[in-house]
Length: 226
Image (cartoon, rainbow, N blue to C red; front, side):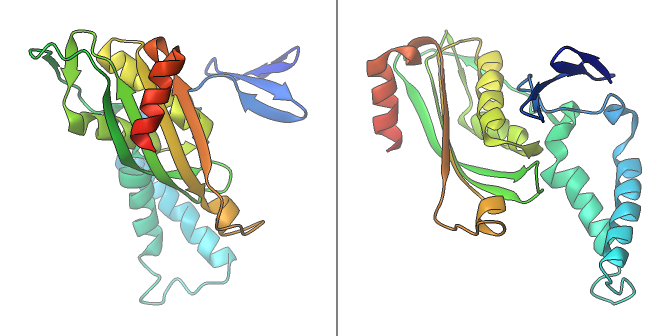
């Protein structure tokens, strides 16, 4: 890591900006280790399982108990194959577009898409809903693919602001349009289950670009997802 003024450059070319003593990622992309793709899934599972076994031992758990002895492997497989599978770009969903044969040129909204991600600060769940909208640039996307894009972005350690931007970026790339809106409303268990312990708080983030910068269009989108 090399320091350059108020920022640091990592070995993989990513930059972190130093702000009030904290390192804030400049890019909306998840910060991946340069060698992340050099390990296959089985190697990752073995490494994580061994480390998690040590965590359990450190906590004083009896890992020979019938209920616990397979836990390190279960956790490792869950991390690699499921909840953090979005860290591997090879798992990015394939997107097929179709001709807009109906010449539909109004807003298309898909709302209440399940958000289930994990806070990168404490590795506890972020649970909520995403609402997305777009205007066709001549092509349309299968509705299930929108859900898959959201899920792919969720399946990595996240902060909600970056998650919102990643969903928007992925949709723009898939649809070849800037006319995209994204809103995410989620509860963070790092707030609800620890620390302040507030179970009534949710966080809302949004992204508007292209036609959605227009106040009337934005208002229409918000009326749909209300």
